[in-house]
Image (tube, rainbow, N blue to C red; front, side, top):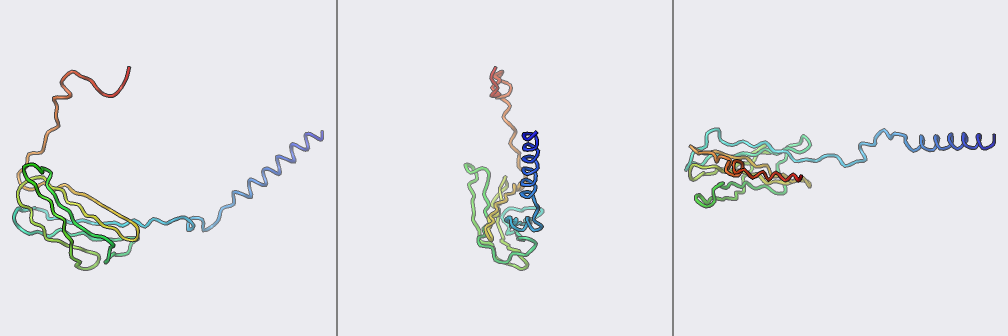
Length: 158
């Protein structure tokens, strides 16, 4: 009988101890690091023309606050075909207003280009990249010779 009371007493004591450890603090969420992500809205010309300066704009917001002075800001633009059409520029955009930065960029010829904004503010770094198709460009087709050769090298072992 003593053993039974001892087991019940231990169970009740353990339940009390565990319930005391699981009390919820009302401001527990405030004790953890809050997200401080830098966000950017990028605007590129609707119709990109070669040989003509056109505006590229990035607007920065962090925690619903407009960022007028990010720690780092650069625009990068490069061609996808570096062998036949080598082109790469790094541009320091100028501040316009309301968290917006602008650079006038000249695309030299038709092709596929990539536009990237590199920025950081208050420990948050971003590098969004957009593909730009300028003029009449044939998009590369996937290489189908490897899928029709009869070799099934899918990485699965028997």
